Image 1 (cartoon, rainbow over the protein chains, first blue to last red):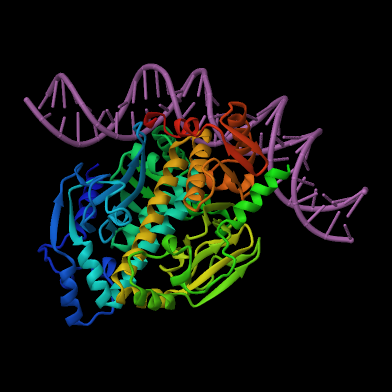
Image 2 (cartoon, helix red, strand yellow):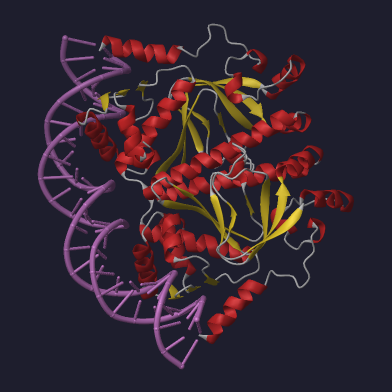
Length: 252
Length: 252
DNA sequence: AGATAGCTTTGATACAAATCAAACTATTGC
DNA sequence: GCAATAGTTTGATTTGTATCAAAGCTATCT
């Protein structure tokens, strides 16, 4: 009980610097959300991309479907979900985003957002007015390339979610989901094997195209099989290879 | 029988100019795949984006997963599908693309393609080396914005496919699919109510996350209900409003 | 500390779509 | 023009997940 909580706290604090600086050039997430290979002078210019910072409390919206598009947002700390909804109220979670990732790309095409972004924990984002991004992209090819890569990465991610939703069974979906989450957390300095979920079973289910009960049952199944330990939001991946095998039997 | 074939021929030829010119500035698809609001001199410079043209025969690959990324491709004539595959051979169709649409964006992030593009009919593409696109984008903000919009549009499209795959039933998926196809064809000067499918039931099923038998049964159901006429690849949408209602009951 | 609300787990049953199977139709090649 | 192949339709049955239902757990608030 107590050590679970300790783990939870630790996961939250690992990427929080004690003193927060506004400039990209001195941001410890730079290598995640900004291009590398800049000299110092260029880096100073790059700081102009970020206009302001914005705090979003857990449960609050960063932007919402239909809202005018002005800026991209780089997540400094915290965790978001993005989702789209039908007129009759069905919600589809389209992604979960963590520190160093950029959201808001959906708004570019029509100058208004087509999805909602909700903070799943108290979060901090860098507001990057898209006009600034475009202007500096013209000046710095390396930034231009970076922006293109971020957008392409999102297209490729969504392709793989389509594969998940169109072709995979519940166990494969959840295995892929857990492996992806833990891999991204590990890239941010967290454990390879332990994580605390920031989203509900219902939100996981919405992302993976299954009902919350099925998500819960699949967690229980993995747990019974000794592949993971689950206790509510806390998950310990005991046998990562078993998860990989469920996700992709041929490549193990 | 004969008039179906006439319709088919007509649909193929409508966007084929008698004489094909290489330059964007004189291309009748320009308003679909290139930004508008250029003066003549700029347009001439823009012609540099397109390096060459390439003919792809029906069934042949334009690019394939793992292949090095060099160029984007604007479809001049023809029809493509893009797909991703798992190691154990399951295929997910990620999109169907027609004249004026751009494919290859998946390759930017890792400098290699992550999906396959197959011509579903004899096709013609404009090869746009990405280095040219990026260079001219820096020079022409309107082109830069256009490239960003194309990528954002793809992200938004994939969001809506995720909604389809995650939340909708077979009838809703097929209704959405038909409405989307016919709307895009109509924007290219074709009928609002008649179309000839370029893909098999299996490919439609792969795109929509259902088996070919279910696709066929759903077509038959729509036909029995008097919503469409189907004869193999030929589809006549008799009651577009009924389709819209199936797709989105609240917004009708 | 107890009450409340939100979330999760587990069980029983129902159902939409998958699978298996076979006949039918269109297209291609010789 | 006929055979072979590829694609489509329809029927019977199975199955994975949804749905309905109820109990259990956790966190929050007073």
